[in-house]
Length: 253
Image: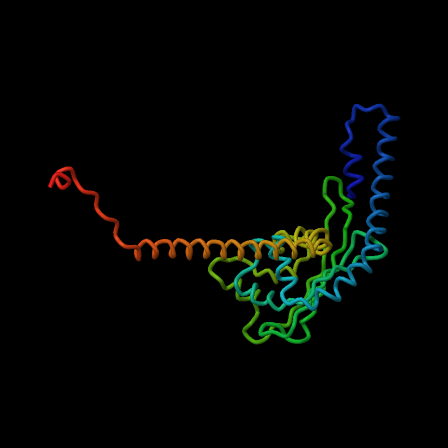
């Protein structure tokens, strides 16, 4: 069932028939208008983001910094996942020209100790599937992506063998959206990357860089304060001892 259908079904039953039908039509028109706006936005942004891509691929650690700053992956990245993500050189979202809701997320890595060369580029497509069953929400579905790991370097397998039972982030590439046992929050991660992280990557990168600069500056100030305190203490130790004031008895003598 589409979102517009769900909204129409949620309209109060007590409304006059004419009002109900008019509002139902408005919901359909709004849904169509939003789809057109989304499509227009993607068409206008595509060449701009392509130009950005040419430059960000030259910045070492750009996308790793962006993903960390955005919190998109939050607690889903293990220490070993992070090691592989350190080799990330590009993230790109390709929107479907026919259906503006559909998109493909591409991850590109430089050669590393984890992935075989034919898996340095991983593409995962997401399609919006409208539910035809009443009361059942629409959702995104995706085909699982096979990752060719180097010998004994399969992070998804290592995660399953781990005592914590936590999935590797790279298990996300196996997400289908079709049933139990699927990667948790798989759809949510995809939409966060596509709608927020990817279009606003420069903002996240600049904010993260500024935070690092502020921390470094604060560290310098703290060091200067420590040095200044040390100098004052040294001056105090080197200064000649003050003469002791005479007591009344000593003055009489």
